[in-house]
Amino acid sequence: MASGRSIQLTKQVGEYLVASELARRGLMVATFSGNVPDFDIIATDFKGRSCPIQVKTIKGGDWQFSIDKFSEISFEGKKQILGKKKSLPIPDLVCVFVIAAEKYGEDQFFVVKWSRVRDIIIKHYKYWLDIHGGNRPRKFDSLHCAISEKNLLKYRDNWELIINRF
Image (cartoon, rainbow, N blue to C red):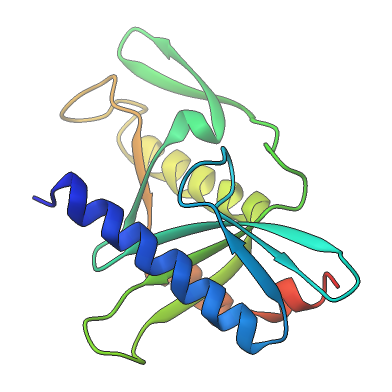
């Protein structure tokens, strides 16, 4: 299992990889190293317009979340009921999912609106609950969910989502 230090290093690598990619595209970038709720970096153009960006980095596997970050959730006994979508912490927030590779230059980036991330996660979580009759098989009260690379393929290297904001 990854240590706290290892997790922090992975997060930092992802933030700097994204900052580097955006700088190559002519944007100034400030990183906050996890000190700002809801976003990790701000990209700014030469006119001072800005775009907050959430960065999620893994070295392998899927990106892990809790469904209650995206949807209201309630229980009927051991059955989970998804309620309405939660409002976005920042309107039009962009998320960059990073797979940090061991070899330089093999990193992967998936650039997507946070609202779309929310919709993808809710859709897959609901599907998973439906095939299990609304009951999580192992731990009924677990809110764990994940998003995988295959769910994000159409957003690979979608840097225009950020660039077109300016």
